[in-house]
Length: 426
Ligand code: S3P
Image (cartoon, rainbow, N blue to C red; front, side, top):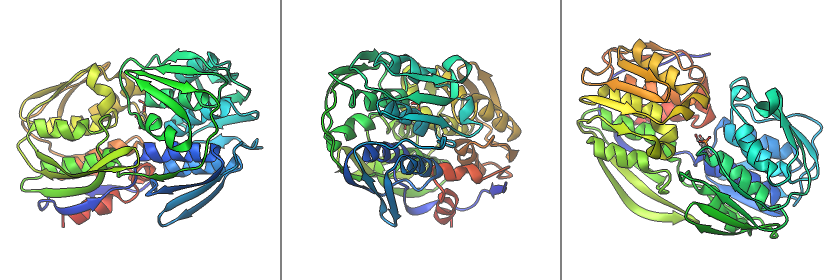
């Protein structure tokens, strides 16, 4: 465990490039393992979650080479049964996606994760996968990892996700592309759509209409070249820092502005920061841009259930920004936060209070009274990367700075976050 501290200092200036998007990287890893031939993933996310996914596909027989540019996978077209338990470590995405992937492979697999992941539900994936004929069981009556998958031939099905979750939707899509016959995967509230965007590059045949994806089953797959744009959820922390510290002016280069991921930056603009999107371009099927953020006086926010999926990973950070905004903010409809790497509703409430904030946790969000800023001090991160980064950002503006109990979890998504933040503040 190592502590880290951030104190108020200079305005943030200059530019930063971001690690490759974690969600896109993990999708490319699992599809690259399934598709025969060499798949190159450029600008792959360097964090521990992506490494966990790589180790899993390696254990399933995929050759993996990592280099400065990203990684190269040599998919064999079929996965090999593994004589060990596959460990997704802290990564919900790796565990849920692998469940859909492996349900259709003629092998048996056991999936687990670290103590945090073993507390996070899998029934949301197992239930709809059963409609394809999948044979999967899990601890506590199918609720929690470890997950045991007896892979078998699946038949196409019409299924709907019963929670708004891109992980669940993606697991279903990975099963559907291997199933016999067509499938339809439906979601009521739109969630990040990276899997849908990436599937055609690997040869899968899909059509999208509203909240439905139609998949033609068992289309032959082929390897692909994937360019991963900068991770908007990693960029959000630097953007928030620039918005908070007076006179800051920061360029975030090459960030994904996928419509299902850019809501944080749009909200930051409506709160009063100056945010502009420049050099909009594409990396394969994904749009990206350079985002310029200049500081501003922040107004409070009100976020409800419909906006939550588009901001899901940024909500702890928004809670921090709300503590510095002039007035009362309310975030509701975000009960999913209790099922993340930590119970993020409790973790944020406790950390905000420790830093002198006024927060009222609710079953599905928070009421936060801004205006007075934060005093700062010691906060606990509960081993959660997004709590750690959100409160280090708070330290830039809290009167006494903020010290976190452990910076280890940051490596899950953005191992170089602190040095990037410090370089901008120099
Ligand atoms: C992710 C989806 C979201 C998000 C997570 C990554 C993905 O989870 O919180 O960090 O890569 O699909 P849910 O799908 O559970 O909401």
